[in-house]
Length: 298
Image (cartoon, rainbow, N blue to C red):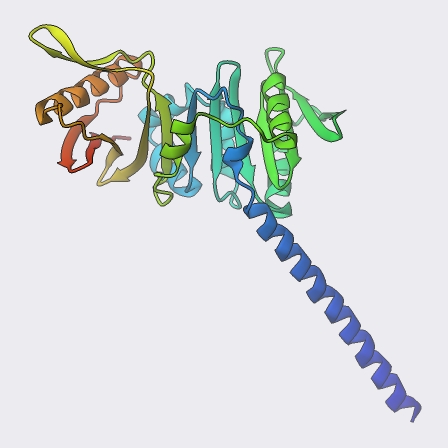
């Protein structure tokens, strides 16, 4: 009888432990699902100048960052620390970068596993230093000392990890999360909804400063100013390609759209001499579609 009672107690204890484990797993799953429902784009400060979404980090790494000419383009605009996240983390599913006059902000969404992976990478990068913790408005900020008297800071809130070399930008994001009233430009919001999230990269950039125009009879007949352009970036048969679109304006001829494609290519080449895109233009009803490609060599 005692042996039988002992077996019953052991069985009940085992069931209790199992129920606690399952309950913990369910709670963790719910938290993870809750985190993934947070929209990163809602926490981006409204003074954003450009956006880059990395949807498939493994593809971005193996097919783009390993091409030296392309790597040089990206590292000229993105802190190498953020690119190392793409190269080193096996848990990273996506990240978003926003570009501002004060610097670049990196956003990563995920649960505890992703956050722990980032912490580990940061400790590996800043081997000689420990982060300094600061509490602001009830949020914990961590700052690492880097070379050239620079400091890298980050914080985590509502399942979103945010990092930047600009303390001011970090505080802006924190304020945006605590008081989500302002948002980035409505046109950018609309373009973001057009992203193909299966593409390795999506980008939104301003036309301001590119001086985009089409000449007719020696004078500008069409000029694009104060607008945003969006594109999906991908690799196709050893070519780097970008795909985007513009509204089809009835008073614009197909030749004008082709000329604008040539102008965009020239402006990009003026900034990045190794990027030489050739555009194909397709015109359909309400939209004109641009597909620009360039051969990629090791």
